[in-house]
Image (tube, rainbow, N blue to C red; front, side):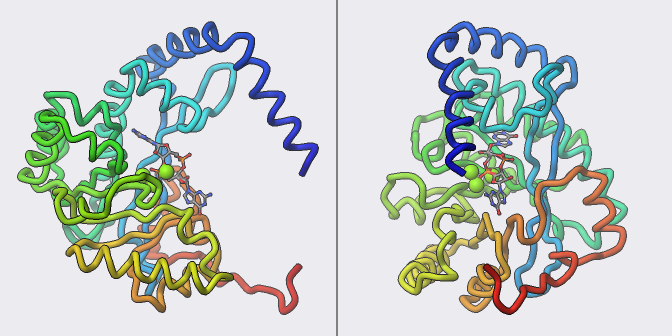
Length: 294
Ligand code: C2E
Ligand code: MG
Ligand code: MG
Ligand code: MG
């Protein structure tokens, strides 16, 4: 592990120190082209009913198939996209592609608004004056009901609190689109906004549940967070569920929705299609843990 660490550090350290500016400029140029050249693609991670394992929907997650570097993950280009403003174009591509995919899944869906499509929205997108028009037009163009779309927005983006952001949020809510606080518990904000913001759901960050299986104190804390969310009249979704134990603890708390590697990693649309076609529940097969693991 130590060896890996050193490796990783050198790989990141060197270019950052020596070529940071140049590299960033070049990457920004490539990213600008990526949308036009269709180098971006989406994967979808299932959100499941913790009780039954039934698919409640998916979160669309963008990836960049770079011609030389291979697949680049969002943490390695979304920040740059935000700084350069490219996120607005990328976000629009994501929204359209995801809605079109939802319509391709349509014949496989049980009923309307039974399957939710989640799309991440960056702070800068909320500041864009025509976001609401764009979302409305996209829904109309694809024939998607507003209630089938949930926009995931981080705490910091939600709380930037400018006039345009507030207008965007209120208008999106009036349109009937679902709004969700993403990565809840990682910001530094006051909890009073849970009752003030026009949101419907809260996605609890994975850092909060990482230790619940082995730490009673943390378990009680997460239980309290869950109750707080419910007391604010909101629904909770737990992300980053990696083990059967975590899923079980959350289920015992009465939590209904979850997402994480335990159920499924983000996967191509074609694999979601198979899950829907066969009406499968997740995780695919019960994970049998050996008696004395480790
Ligand atoms: P996020 O919205 O919080 O998405 C969840 C991230 O956690 C995804 O990483 C997902 O693959 C990962 N994840 C899911 N389950 C587990 C788990 O059990 N364990 C662990 N360790 N990780 C898990 P990904 O796809 O690399 O995306 C990272 C972040 O990039 C996202 O975090 C989101 O903030 C951003 N992002 C991704 N796609 C978009 C997009 O289309 N637009 C915008 N604005 N941001 C995006
Ligand atoms: Mg998200
Ligand atoms: Mg998140
Ligand atoms: Mg995150």
